[in-house]
Image (cartoon, rainbow, N blue to C red; front, side):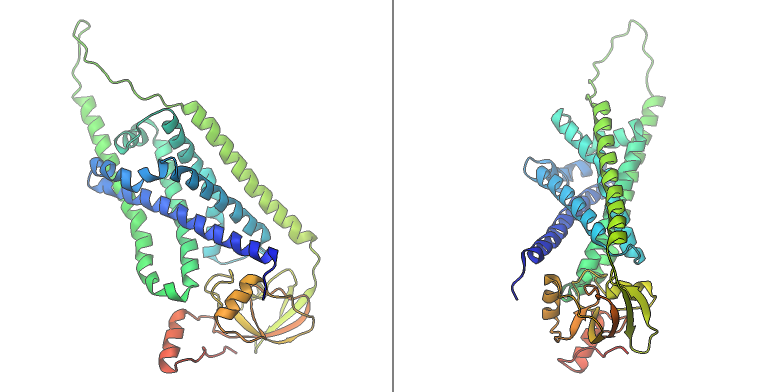
Length: 382
């Protein structure tokens, strides 16, 4: 089936969001790994800096990183605008909220790093640790919060994406402990490096010699000139503009949902009580809001195919599947009367469906099933 221009655009936007997200997650991971070396020494952090974090500030990668940040933020806002409902599970809610906060929190780091580069300031970990622990501890705390939020957002998206891919499910058991260990090690490294700085500062204060007025003075190094005022003004503007865009997106989504015409839908499956819903919601969202558990390893993103349902009856004609739905249905070898619950929005009337997978289905279940009876599909849930 030939894809339309809109379908191709949707697939390209989805791929751009995934790739930009992976690029940003690599950026955060390298910073966290560099911070974790603080448990050894600040010198170890600086020795690893050219490999782990220095690569992000070169003239080629730096602009790509900035572009990835903007693209991921804008596409995230677009996905929120297109959502039929904001009622979802805890993981999805956390990913939405943290996604809205990524740019406001990263503004301080991005603008500060760019300003230092423009002014030729060598801001290595030895200088940065003293700055964050002695001069501007509130900015240091903000950096820790930033990395934590971006890490949570990135891991939530990564796990949702990998969980929907059968060829990746075997590595999830290894990634879960890594997702916890990396930020914990980074915080330990940051705290240990800061502790050393505080001890050195205390010893310098207590052992500082007193000089008479006529005593010869040793030469002191001129501290780097950092344009705090400019950094603060630019950072504040980025924060307010990004928060404003987020608020405008939420308001526009609310207007779109309220003004969009809809029909009443009665959704039924098996022996469960019928659900009164509307043509604004997908079958998957209707089940979720109606407190009827339904399989969906990718959380309704149309990637895994585990939310598939067989259409038993529909009072009104159903809308045509999207390119993403066609691709996923083809991959799982679905019949013509099968649709993805997360992509299907009934036009109205009464719709009766039968799930192809149990509500608690995981890809491990498929391994067990295929081991017992090769080539068979999971048992249908009734």
